[in-house]
Image (cartoon, rainbow, N blue to C red; front, top):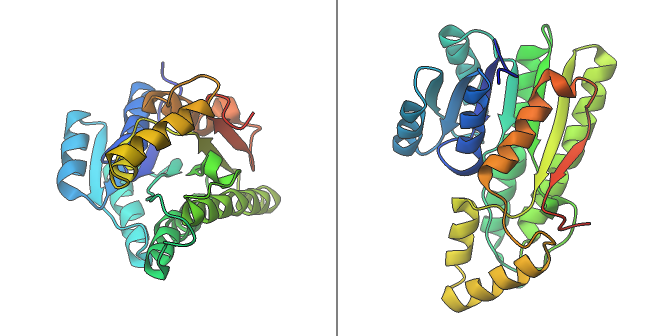
Length: 253
């Protein structure tokens, strides 16, 4: 315990799912955690359940003007941010035949532009002191899926944004490590909501087909993804930057 002692972390999209699991894991490792989300009611409830080491702030990650405010507010409450986890994201099952330009644009706005803004803000505020940035990519940013064109595109772009920023920070002497984590399918509301939208029969088929692709034969528990994020954020990963950590039960092996 205590891998993140004396660290202050920011986790976006933290009202539920992987973001909430990450906040929980960070607090268990003795960090103080600022949790942001568009869902103010659920985010406040989640932060309250984690005690005094957690702080909730409402945030739309696609709005540039909100990022400095988040960093300043967290700084006043906990001190300077050491770790930024760009987790907020959305996803829908659609093919290139059915996806609308509006849905395509919205997915890239949240999954890619939101991460871009988070990375820019993190580098701006941490470059004088150093820190760690972990961006949530996905195995779906490594392989293609006929039903996830926008999600594939956004997560693939996050991986390369991560590498570009990692190289820049290292060469510039900022002492900021930048990595991406690539989860497989996990037991989260994002996945369940996307499946529900397919309808019961199609969802059952999609689950069966996905499980057949995973050698371990199950979806990940959010805590399993969060444990890998803790590692990347911690000093145990001090020589890791510009990397993808795949946590997928063997899916792309």
